[in-house]
Image (tube, rainbow, N blue to C red; front, side):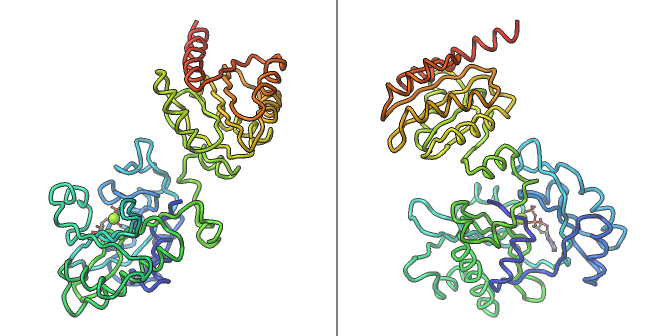
Length: 394
Ligand code: ADP
Ligand code: MG
């Protein structure tokens, strides 16, 4: 799960990271009010969307008066902002953050990520942070500083100082840098984050180190342990199909194809998508309905998959290990009686009680295509899809 910049800053602040003063606004008028409340002469109005790259897309505006704030916010509210990180449809702006303008001397990149090869938290930093970090990491990869945290001992002070020296932080500010690094690391660990990114972390003209931008991503599977984090979820920033699935406890990822997939188990779901591709088709989604494929869950899954207008065929692929094929077959039959399905449905069952399961499907009188192997199921899906499209286009 992603959160907004202002939320990430609030969290990091509670872990001792210094951030500029700021206030959230839901309208241009409120944005002006926030600036007046804060005082000062220079403010930055920042669109709150779950994506970076806002600076170059007009989502970060430096303002020196009430009128400028009003205009900047007016230009952002209600817009679909497109940045290199949003995809072509963009993300809607419904909140802006008004922040004190900071006199920047240097911009540093600082990131905390899960490094799969070392299986550790890795700190990635660059002395040349800011809006061009992607180009810098491509052109001069050697300028990137990396440091791995040993989980048994956690992030050590000497390690933080080493990073500070590598980034050419002035001696008088090294302690501030150590404090910042340790705060981010604690936030990452204690809240089960999978990413903390501060770009830019700035050194100011008056020798302060401040997080000017902040991005945090959390492990969805650990959200139940952090109600204060999980309530920060903003559905306006998510794919509506995916938020609906998450609300129903289904793992769903929407894709661009037209063959809907209903599968139990993440590995089997991946294999199903691969096999569809191999057969010349395009999966419309990844969907893992979990171990207990009860009729209710199967019906929910059908509703979800069919809510995608692109879907022109559905492949149900269930392996019954703990489950039983006859129960699953009952589930599919009940689901198809509850949910109006007017695209071909291909069912492949394997595992415990498969014969009984297939019998139930056969005897249901429903227009189902059953398949024995996954290859056969994928090929039948692609063939059924072509037939269906041809009939529709007649
Ligand atoms: P994004 O990464 O989405 O482009 P940032 O929050 O990093 O958005 O802002 C882009 C740039 O705007 C920063 O690199 C920084 O130069 C400038 N900026 C952002 N916030 C402030 C601020 N409070 N004061 C001064 N400059 C800022
Ligand atoms: Mg940024």
